[in-house]
Image (tube, rainbow, N blue to C red):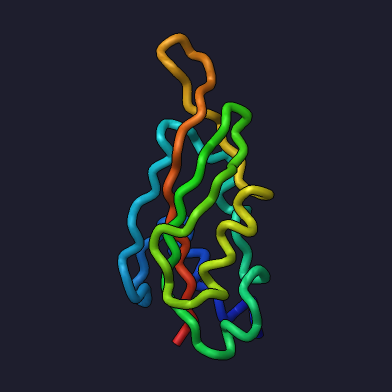
Amino acid sequence: MRYARFGLFFLAFIGVECAAQPWRVPKSDFGGAVPLNLYKWVSPFDIPVEASRDGEQGYVTVTFTIGTDGRVSDCHVIRSSGYARLDAIPCNVLPARARFSPAKDVNGQPVATHGTHSIPFWNEP
């Protein structure tokens, strides 16, 4: 079952350490912006069946701009998982799904900033 196969995916995505985690995922940095819906950014259903079937695993680190409206743009992979199908997922879904309370300047006005985030993908043993 596709959903169960990537069950541990969500534990790492939300920052929960678990013994089965095959690597340490770098901490996210949102440049002062606050994520509003982190748990809705990526779903197991975003992972191509072929990637799961072929045992593709790894984590993808992306960098992006967080606008004054709290939306993501200019997303780029800065650390590949080693698999093109997994690497394509974050920048395909984050601009549509990720929302932030934007960073603020010293006067409390919203300012654009840059963020980095890593998304792990692995199969349960």
